[in-house]
Amino acid sequence: MPVKIGILGSGNIGTDLMIKVLRTSKVLQVGALVGVDPDSDGLARARSLGIPATHGGIDDFIRMPEFYDIPIVFDATSASAHTRHDEILRRHDKQVIDLTPASLGPYLVPVVNMNHHSAAPNVSMVSCGGQATVPIVAAIARIAPVHYAEIVSTISSRSAGAGTRANIDEFTRTTAGALESVGGARKGKAIIVLNPAEPPIIMRNTIFCLSAEADTAEIARSIERMATEVQSYVPGYRLKQEVQFEGIAVGRPLGIPGLGEFTSVKTSVFLEIEGAAHYLPAYAGNLDIMTSAALSTGERLAGRYLH
Image 1: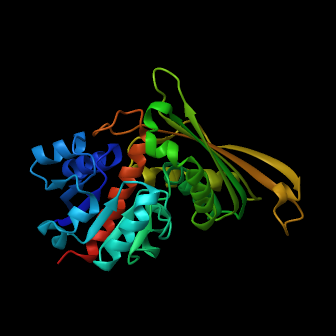
Image 2: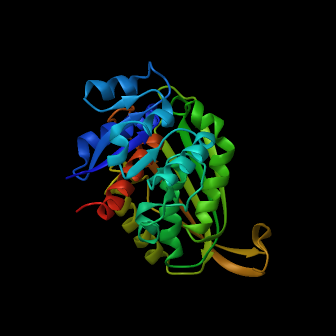
Image 3: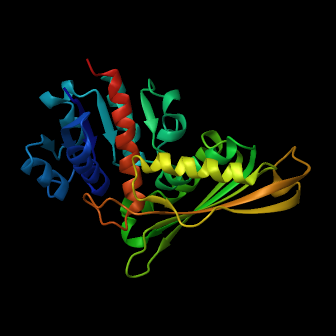
């Protein structure tokens, strides 16, 4: 039998995740969709599909009979709401997959560190930029030490809802932290750009890394392998062009203490992410990679509950 999940949040991300589970997962089953807006499209869709739904938030969720059959809960609400949700769900022994920038649990990027956190009571899906770029930094770091990683995520302003806009500061801090703690960079920096172009652009990411000297062909192969691994759950994830390299000499780079002078390799990687358009438009690759990574995480965690 599939493992039942609950989804907190009936907005774009929560609804897209629900549709993804229904269309693609043989391991998970949506046990409940929980929101706070009685008129949300997500709740209406859930009810039309026979999925238990409530607009009473987590307080109603814990009173639903379905609640006790759900071991895994995805939180697609907000960083501020997640703090309370996590406290309540932990009391009920639910395993939480956090799609907000709250970062209460360890950062998790499925292709990089899934095996390290499968038993954690709460795992953080970092951010859309983190899910897109941390794998590339990790691919470089497994070949050569990465001194510095800088990423720029550009998304359509149409795909940045109220939640994304309210959490811009959290996005930059969370993503930079994940570049270091998961990607392996000694120092990380993240920038997000909301592009108002019409027609809307799909998500694009630029990654710049300064690493120790290494065989650039080996670095390129590592990046290409990693991109293929991410494509296994985000089909629209792709390299825009060949990986670019430049050899540079740097003295005490970027204020990182203890490095002194060294010769490094600058690696530049350019990505784009097209969404699967299950619920959201194809240009919203930034939202699609979050729900896709969360779904992949949930399917892997479900093994703990299959009998």
